[in-house]
Length: 308
Image (cartoon, rainbow, N blue to C red; front, side, top):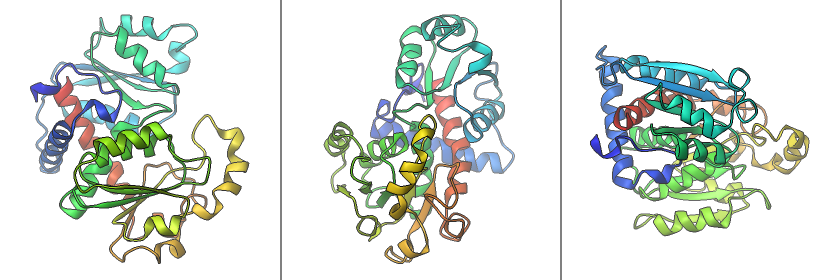
């Protein structure tokens, strides 16, 4: 656990493959122990600041509950109350908070805000979502894959939809652990070449990355099919146009007929039901989206225990 102490977690690549597996291992242990009523106070007396510019259910609840389970405490600070980037600059927020708390979790729009906090704070900063990455979600996805398939290496992942922050973190994090991926996005909405190159360069032996604009091709042979909203927060003015572009990228029963019978489906949530995924699939027996939502708690507890 000492290896991550005091470290920032701004993106999934801030952990190497060995460190990522260590986070997953401790998360599995803490999950079992928590269900048995054993919640070791690993962070007794520690205080975590939750600095949120975006609305949240899972991220807010799981970080706050996680700190309580670990014997610490979290304080919630929202954009309006703090005046993030207006009344208070991000460097000044960092310089103040690091005198009072033991760590900062930030959920923001611009990734530059995460980096500014990390640069100017002397306590660890954890990225709970930015427009560039969503690394905590990737940790939950990886734990869910390992629970369902017994391992990560050799698993095939299909991403269908927008090449967004969730896709970026997932591709970068999964490839290093031997997960192959097929990424299906409409032309003009795929992941940037830098992310694809970095994922390929760091991929474990045997892991491959395929890029296509055909969802049917992507899901063929997939163990896990993943999607996210077509319109992320901050892009609401593009929603109508995006619905037209992404219409054939919906995860529905028809698309799943092209996937293996054992193939599972997940979503980082919240879902725009009836757009990127149907109720039938999200609430159906092949969905592990809510299992993954639960695992947000356990991977974040593990991360906090090791970083703080």
